[in-house]
Image 1 (cartoon, rainbow, N blue to C red):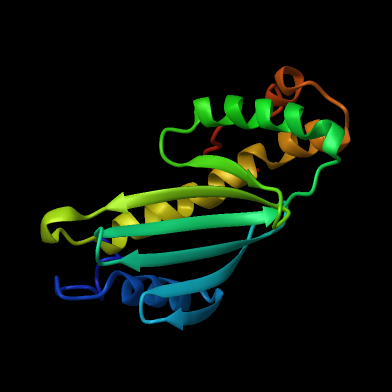
Image 2: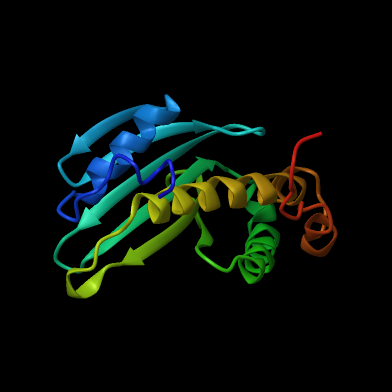
Length: 167
């Protein structure tokens, strides 16, 4: 049994209860917005990401949104969208989208738990790790396209692959 799963031995736990316990364990700032929603701040190397998870019992989906500020000049939006498409091609789980009205870049993912399935603490922890890792990987490329004038192709060349270990 993994360390993450140690505290979660019952299948009757609400997915947001699991997220709250993970947030406490990692000492992330969080706010239990509602019974079915939690918002937190997770510090990355490039910035602090706003992460929200919400449970929708009707469609049995745990939705994760990881967002960061992104308000590119209007003349660079089409290039940024092209960079997002290239980034999304490299993401196996989740996808980026730009919310221009909110001035946010968003990485989102939905874990479907139909038929009464339950999410394990390990699955939820991996969802959150993947969200932040994806944002960290592509943030510099998005910045280069939006404000550095780089082409999406050139910017994607600097998008880091997943690193193992620490320097």
